[in-house]
Length: 543
Image 1 (cartoon, rainbow, N blue to C red):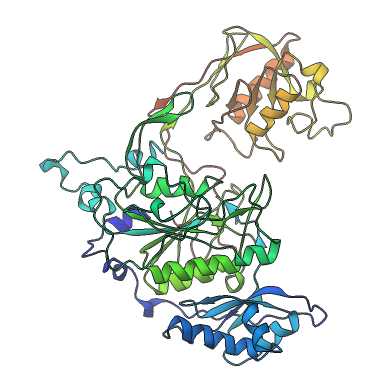
Image 2 (image 1 turned 120 degrees about the horizontal axis):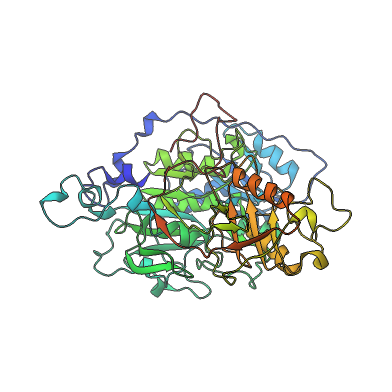
């Protein structure tokens, strides 16, 4: 989506927003009333949408306007004031703590378009090669640069990209501001201070940073600061990864641990500015969540601040447009001439798994590049099986005993699960000192399975694709022990070999980096697929 944006002439940072959309071209968005049970009287966060009413007033006037609605259902002014969490400035609505009867009463008012619960949902959070493979090559500075997209777009200079995600790690060199122009006067954003984050962490690259907790804490209670900074600082890493991919400055001589994928890391728009809107919070060691009220507040501020593009790599499941905070926020952003780019999700390859279906936003799937990390498995019968891995751990260059997971599974493990190397499925007595072949399928990712193999005493592992994952895409993970991953057809060959002998052996060749792999690009099997489950006549995925 950045390629299309950057191919447009930008007269000035303040004019860039008008290139893309005409407010009159967007369909009206009719929201359905919210029905509730009169027996539920405990307060929950609700979102009340009023259409465009009040959006041209000052912020104080808007708050007073929203407060008047709450006064109509609350017992007194104090109760009305304390229940208001967010008064949206551009979205035309507010978030408040309401009982179900109060929400029902508001939904019946003439000017109210919709009232729905702000859910604290586990939205799913959906480099050195991507942009070069896509054809974005650095200009030479000579006459041959005519037609060079980066050169003609000035590397994204003048564009502000907003990121609604888990925040940012500002010390990353991807966000240095060396040589960048001063922040444009039309920018209205702020650098909100908080834990381990203050105004000095913003610069001419990171020009805005905000965080949102009211909806989250109303749903889950006080923030657990063991896993979170109460600020825009990123503790998860997802937001930092997405923003550096989109607009990171060029950083030379970088690679993954072990020296994999060496090169220069650079984003698609390295001179674009970044404004961060943190809505993703950890509720425990393993899970993150976001609240609808916070997401809409982030959209609302992004519109007021003056971003040109919103990059959002998250999605929720089973939401219709009228209750999907991402879809509602994207609609109002699009009406403000902001390009909204969503991820399609990582729930493929089954059909109708694509998320973020709203027609007023771009939905982008996942694809491969031409870089692979070969790590072959050599069987003792002199057959070499192609594989991939990015693990740092290595075995000696010799053959080791090879078994299939179903041969070393504990008794009582269901037959359809015994070959998948699931948690607690392997017998330590049978597994110790062996390389284990794990078939595809099950709930765990391959690198998680490698942990269970190691826990059971295995010294290595080979992971086969499932029939669904097929042969084109092989996962190159960093594992907890020496391991490699192979295609479905290769997995069948390995199983055939294991069954053909009582003394199967294998050695795993350490991984390397290789460029020029074919075919590329292809759609990654985990990339969510169409058709559109809400409106099948609207094409999704778009890119």
